[in-house]
Image 1 (cartoon, one colour):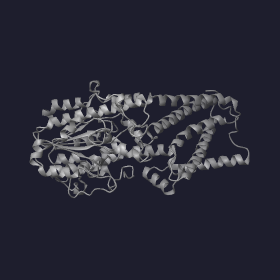
Image 2 (cartoon, one colour):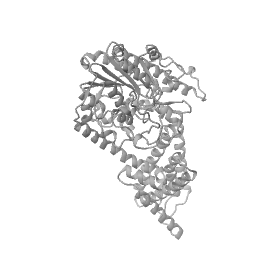
Image 3 (cartoon, one colour):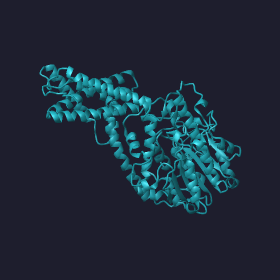
Image 4 (cartoon, one colour):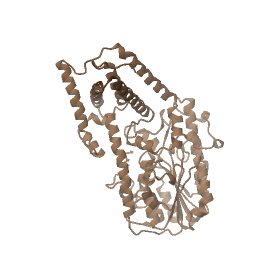
Amino acid sequence: MPNIHNHKGINPIVCAAMTFLLMLPELFMLRGQIWWEAVVATLFNVCFYAALSYLICILFSLAKPRVERALHIVSHSFLVGYSLSNVFLLLSFNRHWDAYILQFLSETNARESSEFVHTFILSCHTLWLVVLYALFVAAELWGLKRVKPWPAWAKSKVGRALEIAGMMLLVSHAFFFGSDAMTNDNRVGMVHSPIKRNAIWNLYQSVLMHKSFAREFDRCAQTLQSYKEPVLSKEQAADFVLIIGESFNRHMSNLYDGVYDTNPRLRQRLVGGRLFVFRDVIASDNGTTQNFKQFLSTASVGETRQWCDAPLFPLVLRRCGYNVVFLSNQFVGAEMDKRFNASMGFFNDPRIASLLFDYRGTRTFAYDEQLVTYYEQQRKTLEQPKRNFVIFHLYGQHQRASERFPEGDTYFKSGDIRSTLNLSEAERQSVADYLNATRYNDLVVDHIIRLFEKRNAIVLYFADHGEEVYNYRHQLGRTDLATDVPRAKREQLDVPFLIYLTPSYAAVHSDMVARLRAAEGRPFMTDDLPHVIFDILGVRSREFVAAKSLINAQYQAPRKRLLQIKKWYE
């Protein structure tokens, strides 16, 4: 980098470039209930970043020339990377650097990282973004020697007044940075400050939130270890199979309102009258980790106690005498030393996992059916004669969808895709890949059902969350629902929820058949999943609330459903 300062002053090109790099993500983050909020936030942030950039340049100018040059190279590299990655996240996912992005990064395994790079990083849009940033840096370097330096400390009264005002702005901004994320949010919310729409504020809050996750794990472990309630289950014979899908938008399924033949096997099972399709079920969040916390916990969204302050339902079932087996195709028990790992790090903590499962899978596979085949081969050693509670966590339709099914199971092609959007060939292929992954998921779920078909068993399938696949706009993946348009909730939260009864179970539980049929149209959110399971199995516990069980006559259907982001779904 050329000599950007000559110790006679500060190059305004450098200050302007730093301000621009910091400010650019803010322009994509502008939100407000009324027009002036965005204007105030923009003016505040321009002044704030200009003052911050000016202060940094002053501090760097105090160093020796070589040190100063090195400091600027490092700081510019960081700012370009920060600004570029933030704009990429905002344009691709309507997200910015926050607690969940940090969590996703710490959880992502090598397989997911490789697929993410191929799907998003190496896309034409991203490469064009990199080119634009490279041109900006080149323009900055070109202008450095063509602009006269400014004095580091202003000599005029107006200049000094501006410098003092800038320093006061930085100090007042720092005042809002406390050590507790919730306190910070409440403080900013009370005064409707534009600081909350500041990327640095969000990044700082992210660090605090990330630390709070670890504290939640500690509380969860303590809750489980202290849970001593004597519990029992009236169901003394049946097995229960819980299948957790991944990234399944139910509007892409012809079990619901989808127009493509994605679920031929499960549709065939509807003929027998023992498959029940619940039509109005949503996830409480669009992230795997957050959903697992809530639907494993007996606490509900909106309660005074958090998920980690209530027992998780696998522990309750083990106390009832169930053999709880957990197999996941996204992560395995060998990774338990990493608390943040593969989408649900909270029970990678050995203190938690050891209390939840009698057996936990130790292998992952390229495709979900291989996981099911593995269970089939090992089931004699994994199962007890009766009262098994088996959990399958599938890779489902997780992006990259083209990696979720074998080539031999390709059914849909890009030419089959019908859309009112002007989709490119690549986008049509993405939709076709997702549909193929959904049809393959149909095969996998049916395979699991066939494993228990001749047993006394209940099979419950649902997905952790949905996924956008160019449904009504040019958007692939999930976004920040707290700031996105309301329609996004439908695509990213509406999930399939199915219960299948085997012939032998249905024959002796005619009352359950009637209860399930009566409940198919009721609105429900998956955070109350434990209450449905307890209801089916007749679990007697103070944790069971009949009014939260979708299939119970006492069920109190919510008029509005509160999401984890503190917004209503309706």
